Amino acid sequence: MQTLGFDDNHLLTIEHPNLSTTKDYAVSFPSYIIKSKDKGILIFNKRQWKILHLKEISEWMQVCYLQENPIENYKINKWMIVNALAIFQWFNEETWEKYYYLPFFSKWIDELQQIINKNFGFDVMIKKESQGTFIRNFSTDFSFPKDKNDILSFLFALVLLYWNFEEKNWELSSIKIHIPVVWAKAIDEEMENICKNLAHEYWIFISSQRLQQWWKSIFQCSSNDSELLSLFNDRANSYLNKNYSIEKYEKKQQEIKQQLIEYIKNAEGLSLSWREEVVKEIMDNKVKFIKYC
Figure 1: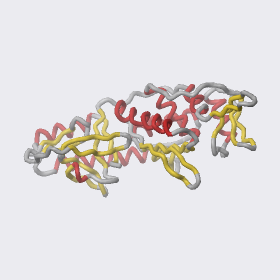
Figure 2: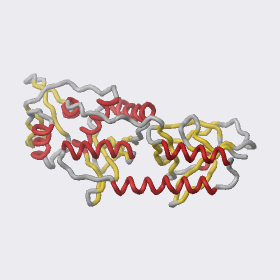
Figure 3: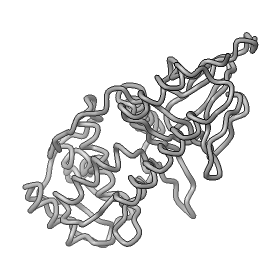
Figure 4: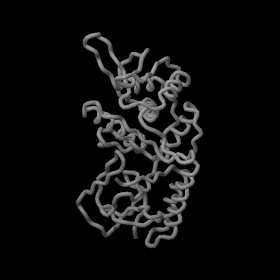
């Protein structure tokens, strides 16, 4: 009899008593890589659930991830907004003046300044000048955040500055950050570590990579993690005076979850006791459906 359950990596898998292998397989999810012996794994692909071997999983397939301890609601650390503004600095050796700037930034400057001044309480001046977009009336040292609350606040600030909330008819589907690369590659590593930290410590999944976009390089972070979307949706509505919704997204997630429960109830060859226990776990806990990448 095959045993269904959540493994040490929190993934919904099936142990095959007759499957013998000593080889470890690496399976990659956004900022989260697991290594495991081959086993059965439940995947969602083309609108249906099925069971594959772990080694057979491929791009765009989704797996069920059990989050036993959902992240607590967090409070925006407004200083992370200032910290994000300070990422790009330049020092004039002739005048001994430090400049802060937003590279390749020319849109909605007035609205951004109003949001920062009014909603976050910082009296900064953002202005498009002949040599670029500069931040005046402002001085601070940049540092990468370390704890959960600061990391989430920092990422929210980066979404505000360097891309957007992807939505259609105000229905939020994902977040995406495109930071122009005018820094050393060591900073790429710091950003990747932030994403890995969220995945391994707090089970929030964000993909990150450096891309070539037309004539410039960008560092991209993107996520459709249901928990992160919910947190950022609340902040966007509170601080940015937006009217986003994730109702359709959550409805779709609930439909996938219900399909999974029905699949487990009707799948052949599974122990009845394990089947009932897993269904209860899925119903009682937060589960995420994350894509292989």
